[in-house]
Length: 375
Image (tube, rainbow, N blue to C red; front, side, top):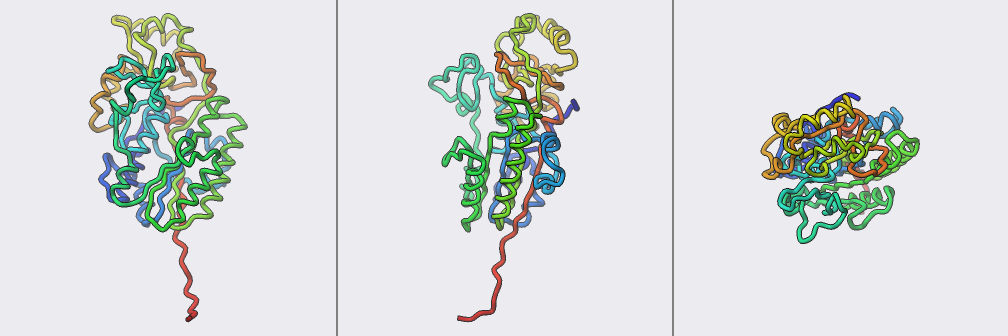
């Protein structure tokens, strides 16, 4: 697999910053030049439709070259590190890089409560039990989202997703909701998120025929949606790509597991490892023995020096969240703490996971013809 590092001059957080600037709001980071050029036409509706897991490599594998998405593909650009939903959709939601938001991956280590916490669910990653008395992510790593800022500027802003009202039960319903919102005359931003093909890829792998059928259906429904819009810039993108993996269970490697203070956090392809004192070399040798060439091991210092999670000022809690070693997949390997029987994953440093599409459909305002009739 080809190794690919994130590009924080040309990534999903920069897209969010372009949208903020379009609505007259000073963004926290640089904007995305490609998006800036598209936004110069001053559309009434700016719509970002994010299909979870539909990376460029997945499009190449499953969609036709002359299909709707490929025909409207403006450019390739970068996810965040790790290329995973929590980090990348938070970047889309805020314009912040993961090092700035401290929303790093599926789970994060929160020193104030000494637990690995599932960000979106506020549950203990080891036991599955709810975290009592505090929402860890929003208490220790709060941020102001793009929708709040746009509404304060006087424009409208909407977020559509399966887990938000009106709770669309299908992609067709999601498109119907988008279509309805775009009909009003007000200037607005609409962000729509759909949890597939990622959800299905985790279960059956990124290359399965069912994924092809699903993505082609999304393409068909999106083309129908676009045909019904006017005075709208529709951007279709993804948070990350997805790869088929060979899954491993941490407890099957006692020499590796025995070196750890606690269960790894962040992701199965970006393992945040707190190592017992004096065991660093033993852990590295265990990785070399069991996973030769499959992971890059970064020290905490290297992670920070390389700005792996992003540039700019780090969140005050970032360093306490990071362990001694970060093991990042550059192959098809993933390591879970439990046997989850995953067939597909993401969050590694490969081009297939890191490179995402910027698809743009420009629908100008429909001009009303002057018939010359007098009444």
